[in-house]
Image 1 (cartoon, each protein chain N blue to C red):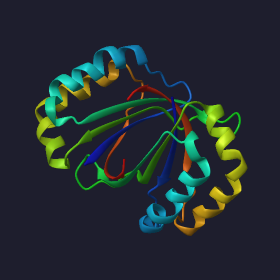
Image 2: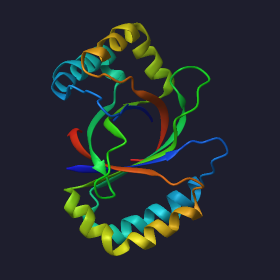
Image 3: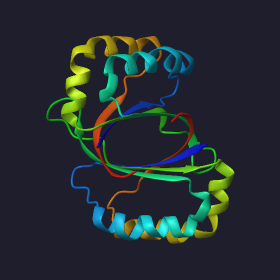
Image 4: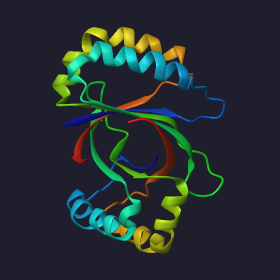
Length: 104
Length: 104
């Protein structure tokens, strides 16, 4: 099992529309990725663990797939649609990486 | 429900002992945090989603608690023990933040 981690930097002045993200972007992702998507977690940064420090990321999204190939097959045909939706809710481009799930 | 996201930067030359982490550090965390810990996910960075790019983080750990206060009560008495163990498996200090779970 792998995760696609999508991390939105919490820069000074960064804007993120969580309502649009949860009610439009994520439902679209689920629709186009279909049964290849095995899980979806969305987290909103609250702050650093040290007092009065900022969260490094405003939003973290973790998408589970059986494999990198499974993600690529499901995501490829819809890559442009997904990418072009980002500007509707985020002023910042996300950091995206593949991770191997070691413990869940 | 909140998550404590612990993110280890994948810097050039960074070292991370996943075997020690999974067989010693995580079991210690579970023991000292007890029933306050509601979930624990460990992911190992594989690479960026663009071809031939590095993963931004070598390891991501997501720890679930009922609330920030629940984490602080459980973690506080063991903070030094947990912090002092990090050098045994990682050359890099992690980025740590609190996040609110919006979708799980």
